[in-house]
Structures are given as C-alpha cells and as structure tokens.
Image (cartoon, rainbow, N blue to C red; front, side, top):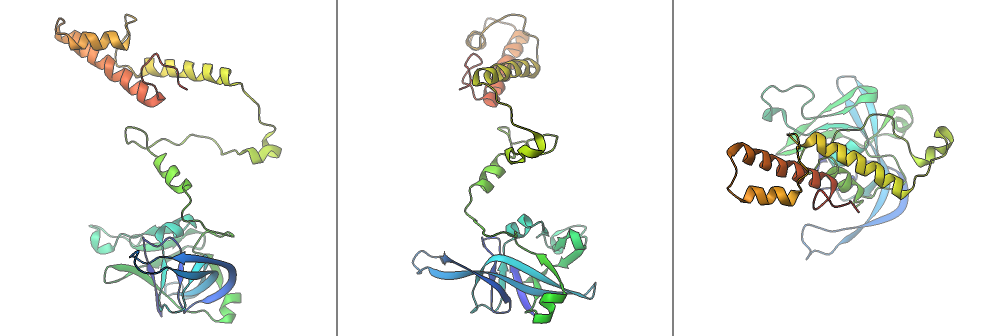
Amino acid sequence: MVRTELDSHANMFVMGKNCIVLNDTGLKASVNAYSPGIQSKTIPIVDAAVAYDCPFQNKTYILVASNALYVPEMDINLTAPFIMREAGVQVCEKAKIHVEEPTKEHHSLYFEDCDLRIPLGLNGIFSYFETRMPSEEELYTCEQLNITPDGPNWNPHDDRFGRAESNMINWEGDIVEKTKGSKRTIDDEDDHGPVSSISVAALEAIVDEIAHQSVMLMLPFSCEDERSCADVTSSVMTCDHDSNKLVKDLNCMLGVSKYCMCHGRLSSGDRAE
C-alpha cells in the first residue's frame, strides 16, 4: 500500500510512481521548491488513477486525478483538500483526537454519490489514506470516482477563488446571505428568453430609491428634522445639549456612517458613481 497524503500547501495533485497514467496532456508545469535558491523543475501534467480498497464495503474504487503533476521518483502521492472539495468531495481534516465527541465524519473523505467514506490516518501529523496501483482489469471493471475537478485544465492561480471568498462577508465581517431563486446566465438565452436592456439613468434611479428606503429603515430613530450629517456632527461636538439629545445625535451619525459604508459614499448626500 502507498500513502496518499493531504497537503494543504499543494495547489495540484501530485502522482508518484504507484499510479497508472491514463493520459499525457502534453502540458508541463514549472515547480519551485521551498527556497528560491533551489532551481525550479519542469514536471509533466497527466491524468492518472490510483486504486482504493474499501474494507467496509469490500469493494475497490478507482480514484481519478485530472491535471496532476507526475513525479515517478516519489513513493507517495500528494493531494490538496481544496482541490478535492472543488471536485465535490466532502473533506474533514480535523483529527478525531482533537474532537471532544468524535464521529465517523471527522478526519475522513466522503463521496456522497456512492456513499463511500474513506477514514484518514496520521503519519506523524500528516493526514493520509492508503492507495495502490490499480491493475488494467480494475481500470475497466471498478467504479471510477473523480478526486479532482474533471476538466481539460486546472489553474490554481485563478483569482476568481479569492474574489469569491472575499465576497462571502460584508464590510462588518458577517456572512452575506445567499439570494433566493435559481441561477441564470446569459448563455441560457434559449431557455429564459432574451435579456432585457435597461438604461444607466433608470438603473441609478432605482438604486437611489432603494438606498433611500434602506437608510430610513437602518437608522434607529425617527428623523424629525432635515439636518445634514455636517449639522449633526457639529451638534455632537458641542456640549450645549442634554444627554438624550446627545444619544440621538450619536445614533444619527452611526446610522449615516453605516449607510455610507454599505453604499460606497463619503456622505449621505453623495451620489454613488
């Protein structure tokens, strides 16, 4: 048996000598070591497979890794949890010894479609699961599972991952709620009809109206006058009012500040560009 270790710093699957190469993509990657003083090495990119023998189901599965680095000098394989999650694999890296009430879900990989759970072991502090080189017969007779995204290429430097992650929280650090409804793309024109156009002026009018309603709902008081943010600030900086008025003015400043942060404005009177 061979260890396939989880490596959170790896950005591509790395296949060692104990695998079957299914396809040489013809692509190569320049791989750098931990030190910039060490010369980089050019590694071929392949589609490859390993076998996993499930002792609980008494069944062998073929795990297919697309766009993997092939390093036949290595005895082990390396995989990144991020890549497996992108392929739909449920990955729990937290070791059972670190959980007060551990379950089988902890420290395991789970393939929901076939109800396969692979418990992870520890080699020192590195998580791993055992695999081996499959036979030619097993490649054709055993069920195959994708352990990496199935596609013609994989770009670990795509900035869409980072942008999508940063968009998950708002300016206050809270999770942005998902919008309800089905996803639609412009490519689905045949299914959903032509996309209607809207003028910039009309769109700005809609946004301004929603923003006006939002700030009125956001402010924790009733605005009895039409004082500007500057008027409120001047009032707060002076000491000629009672405590109730001070609290009211401070709440006003807080509400206006939150409104400006949410809508990208310097003041409540500015128009968003």
